[in-house]
Length: 151
Image 1 (spheres, rainbow, N blue to C red):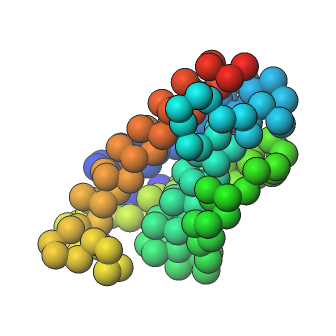
Image 2: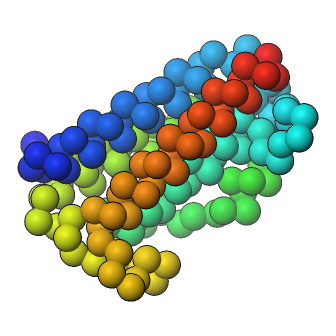
C-alpha cells in the first residue's frame, strides 16, 4: 500500500460505501425493479447506480488516475434497461479504479489543486474527494429508499 493515513481512511470509506451500493443492487428482486420510478422521483435505482459509477470513474479513475474513461452523463440518466449484472460490472470497475487511485495517493497530494476546471479556485484534491464521498453517500441513501419503496 502506498497511501498514507488520511488517504488510507478515504480509500477505506469509499470502498465500504461502494460495497454497500453493491449490496443494495443485490437486494433488488429483479432487473426490471431497478428501473421503476418511485412516485415523485425522477431517477430510478438503475440510473442512480449508473450515475454513482460514472462519477467515480470520471472524477477519480480518469481525472486523478488517467484511466482513459470517457463519461457519458446522458447515459447515466437516460438508460432504462440494463441488467443487474451490467450495473454490477460498472460498480466493480468504479471500485477497482477508486482502490487503485487512492492506494497510490499520498497525504501531501491531498493539498494539491484538483486538476480540472470545475473545481478550480482553490479546491484541493482532498476537498474534492470529500465532496464526492458525500455525494456518493447521499445517492446511496436515495438508492436504499428507492429499493424499499418500489419493491
